[in-house]
Length: 563
Image (cartoon, rainbow, N blue to C red; front, side, top):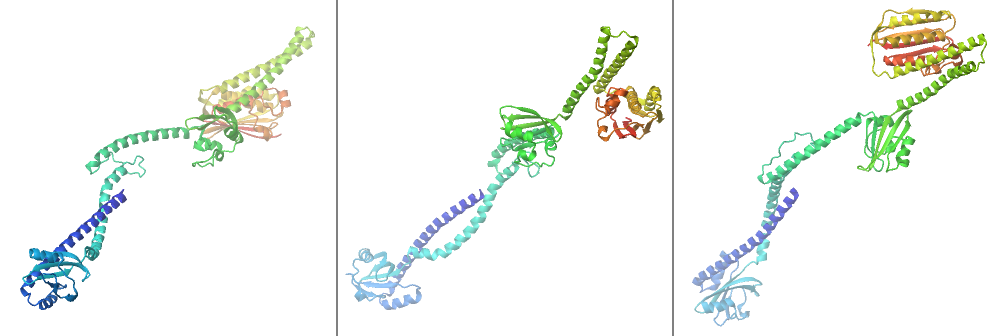
């Protein structure tokens, strides 16, 4: 805008200067011509006084004038009788000259024309005398000559004017543009320069105030609109960034428009968020890539469970028509999938464990029903087997119910309990069973108070000590210890039994898992004892550690928080 103002100003001034110069030169020429004519007229009337000796007059004029004056004396018939510049004898008759004719008629005459004899523009002035006509003439510069003489001055004036106009136009354009720039600078809707945004846009020019007020209204509405968008964007970003689920938004070319932290953590922790990054740069998971690039029907939604880095995620893929792209949601269902697998295994194991004693009982029941057992010894033998299988079945059902009860206990009921009393209760309860295998039980500990569930802790000690008896060698030993720390208490159950292999140590807390199935059948048990122990430890936010070596025994350490 400033350049246009500058160029426009220069054009107007230069055009004006050219027109002014032409007019000035023309008026100067007119003034110059008038002065020449008036000076010649005055000189002619002065010469009349000295008209007797024209040669003397010519000599005097040359001594005082800086230009030549031609003096011509003409007879009434037009014959030239004298000329101070040309051989008058060779000159033609001047009767037809305009100035001569006017002098004869009116006493004086004048004319301006090109002189053939002098070869220049000449002004003639003639006066009628008694014996003839005396005519004075002088050459005059043409208007072009006058203009050319004034060119240096005009150029100088042009230069001065250009400099002056440049300074003036720049100052003027800056003054004109400055209030507009001020308005524009105040119209910083994004406030990118972290400057204090004025509440009201003002200008020193009253003509621009209506524009300023209109801009202010537009600016206020725009700022509110942008602020609302920013708040919504921040709110959405806050939600997406703190989502446990991974969320990815792709455009129609499967380039990433948005991806939250959870999705990056799930798919590629080293991924850096940049513009125009392809989905393939985020993950190369074959199943997910196949769904996005090959299998997805753009008119339908896709839901599928996929394996990503040994974790299971339910993937929801939806077409978003408003962005002509795809929204991907990743929900971690690892625990659910594993729980389903555990439930299936549990159901299969329960069915198997229940089927065996029920089949035995049913078979012996049919023997009794059909009267095939009449011998007292056979009746006692098979009746005892029915009783043992029934007892085994009852223990199994009780353990299943107990395990389900602990798992489903959503609300914890905790109170201060003494672990010493719980351990002592279990030892006294199982002391007789240990004596049948000549196993000694040593208890090391003092009163130790924790915040827990007394019934569950009694069951924990009973299961652990009972296992230590079952899988111990005759004449072996069991050591029960309570070690108190600042924040937690450690329960140690150590035996000198058969031990557990390293690969089995990780699985002994699974339901129905038995290290040595043949040995387990001999000693009985449901295979749920350590699983119940694991759930009780989790119930109390504790941790359990296993140290074992085949043939040398096992040590279980359980850390229970005091609070």
